[in-house]
Image (cartoon, rainbow, N blue to C red):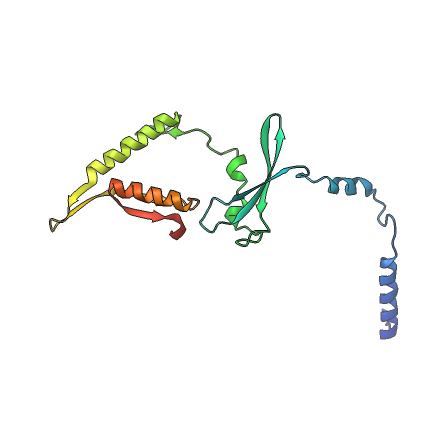
Length: 196
């Protein structure tokens, strides 16, 4: 192998860099016009920006959802972090980054499903049926576990067979209302997702 001096190495390096710096219209022989045209046509071009908050936890990261009207329905194109938000500055955690799946997943359950005791299959039911069933089960649990007095004879009027966990996407007013409702029912095991 021929040895080159340091001076020759620098000359060759400079010549190579100058050769790369010379603007060539099509250095690799590809037609780049179609590629440039496609890169300018963004998937969200002309989409409406809708600002929202991530539903997963209580941090309150801001989201931007891009939507378009298609065939009389609103189509969700993309969800990303809002760079103008002082909370997340456009960044999202792994759960927040998958927020689009809440709306577009093929596995998303869109109707209430009920599995009767002892059954192995789920059945579609109406919202009225489900809300009535939840109310019946809540009342039955409350009635079966209601404690009017503790062991010392103090009046406590509580139920220990029901627990409630508030959602992190609750507003302050929703959290206050939910807590008051649960306390009215005698529920003492109350937690907020923001603290879990």
